Image 1 (cartoon, rainbow, N blue to C red):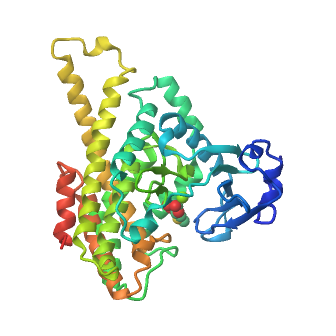
Image 2 (cartoon, protein in one colour; image 1 turned 90 degrees about the horizontal axis):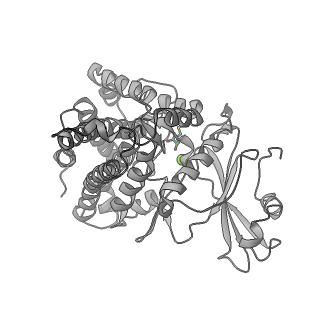
Image 3 (spheres, protein in one colour; image 1 turned 90 degrees about the vertical axis):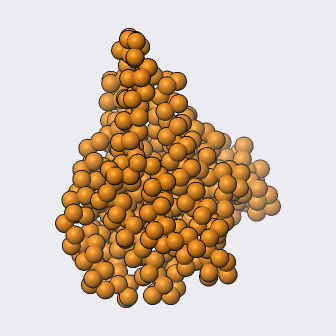
Length: 418
Ligand code: SR1
Ligand code: MG
């Protein structure tokens, strides 16, 4: 099939030629299509049958450019090949947190998948101040269960290397290397500053040698530590939720990288929301304490549960090291010590990458609505300064934190809960 960019007008005709669509739609001549239009990279269409709107799918199609910039920024469509492969992996190891995939085509660079009609994007829901009691439980399972089976603790060396090869994703990694791990820390042409940002604010981020060294170290880690298959862009806009269920979407940035990059992306986004809600809760007419407390407890629960689930997977599926390796009188202690040291290392990376994910959302090209859509620019600037203070402390001191509770304590030191 030859690639063509779909439009709301051509989507119905395209779906009509896919046999499995007959099982989803009772009348393929009665479809309405809405372009959702909020992606940085791709086009997303919601398709419903007019008379039976519960018969519905979502189509996500990659176009040969970076949508947030426009056609002047070419970006190959192969990102969809990585998304399809990653969705298959996520479905295999954690089907309860992945939308159902009905059809995919690398030629057309698209997937047709379950429309999560009873769920909404987590970022939007958190902006509205909604609480999701099962979020940490679900995301920690997603992380531990999709990541562990792609590590060298599970795969043989040969299997791992072949799988790494299937996920060499240089173009999207380059976006992260530039927009997350380089540009925001210099006065780069792609950065976007609002009118209240002062030169001193910029210098705070862009002229601190210790910070620059720390960021360069995180970037090197990102580029060289192929520990496991990652989602690659696990911010809270890549998660759909309701009170009972959680789905992870959009893994086009999937690649083999440092495990802390995914865990940190999620936790960093929680901290962004924590600082945003110092201003947003009063905007909603509420006292900030309850909601911000939930955010911090969710960060703690996510790390603590991720750690114990990852470790449990390791103990249950210890495959790559022969049992004889640990079979000496204190072998169990040695194995436990190894797990503990590895998880400490992931924790340090988690803190460092969470910080990078926070800072890039302030001066970098791609913002987060939680903060960027605070209408009062002075209030927004106050939030951004708190984020910068926290993030700098995190990445520079990332090896000093002994527990996630120490990190949430720092968050509160900078902006008290109430
Ligand atoms: C140009 S930066 C676009 C961003 O959108 C994606 O969601 C990634 O986070 C990427 O960095
Ligand atoms: Mg995305």
